Amino acid sequence: MSSKEKILTAAIILFAQKGYSGLSMRQLALAVDLSVAAIYHHFPDKNALYLETVRYAFADKEQVFDQVWQSKGSAEEKLSRFIHSLLDVMINDPNFHRLMQREMLEANPERMQLLGQGVFNTQFCLLMELVKELAPDQDAHLLASSVLGLSKYFIEYQPLLKNFPGWKPEHEMPAFIATHITTLLLNSFKAKTA
Amino acid sequence: MSSKEKILTAAIILFAQKGYSGLSMRQLALAVDLSVAAIYHHFPDKNALYLETVRYAFADKEQVFDQVWQSKGSAEEKLSRFIHSLLDVMINDPNFHRLMQREMLEANPERMQLLGQGVFNTQFCLLMELVKELAPDQDAHLLASSVLGLSKYFIEYQPLLKNFPGWKPEHEMPAFIATHITTLLLNSFKAKTA
DNA sequence: GACTACCTAACAAACGTTCAGTAGGTTCAT
DNA sequence: ATGAACCTACTGAACGTTTGTTAGGTAGTC
Image (cartoon, rainbow over all chains, first blue to last red; front, side):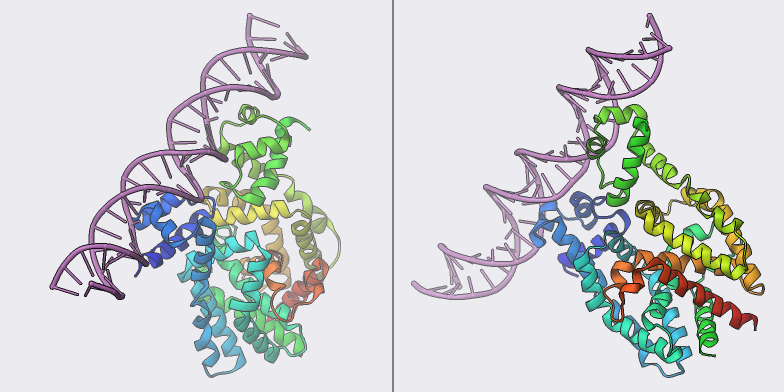
């Protein structure tokens, strides 16, 4: 792994943990065992480093769901598999997920456009087609968003949900959450089309 | 309004916008037209100020839903009213909402406990009782979480959702979102209990 | 005379960024 | 084959600025 890649890999973790202004160039340099000037050799300034870090973190992430779309089975099974995969990604790559949360807080219009029309576009379209199959007479955009929303919320708010009454240990298991979300949505689809 | 309240009110807005490390004491002092030392007269240090700001922002917020619980009508109508109120609060008080998002990112265990067992406890319990009425044989904690999750996601991810194909202007109207969430959930309840 | 609410001015530390220099490899005319 | 020129990847030290925090003083109230 090159020094540049080492810097970016560490930057993903540290920006995710501390945020943009919470991470200093010196802290990052210390983490990758390089001088501050070495970082400036690879990146013009902190802002450019952050942008490239986000881009680097979001690469690869698209093809995680390829196996879901290529798999055989009913639409119901595909939805279940998608939700399971989504939760797995978020659990297994918490730094990517936290970086995404921070991006949503900033909600820079240009970068939102990049995500919505670029990186995540294909996945969202495939998801919309799937829910259209399951509930043809409903608003596909709203339903696809609901799939993502339920999945993301259960992960992001787990630390809070734990402290609410009625919480059980299985509530933080990805497979359990995924099953709940899947049945919730499939039940709703059935009721509407009936 | 006292100087201390003025400081806290401005701090809610600025911490929400810039985050803890993004806001300096000097910027805050400038915003409230006081010297930095004046802030230190009211708060021992920056961290204590932040904690009190969060506490201040979360005060009041409990009683917003009182009218929902005290209102008459079926459980279905109450759920609808709760979701509408929830979305209204989040839209009308974006600074509070952003501060909450930042708190979830940090997810300090002590403060999560404070929120889950203190501030939001009553509301979550009332919501659980409501969904128990609507779907007695399902996991009330999961369903109550789903209500909150769907509502929060549609607000938090609006800037991204806008850039996905299939988006329509009505998708950012609170009333429209609330109706979608309500029918989605009520349909799911019906299917399961049938 | 004590107390509250504030001020100006300063502190050391940390910040982003830059500059001059070096060690090691490649290129290339001689 | 060799030495000059050049490039890349880095270092240490410094720059001016901003940071959180504090010390000491003042004006008004009780």
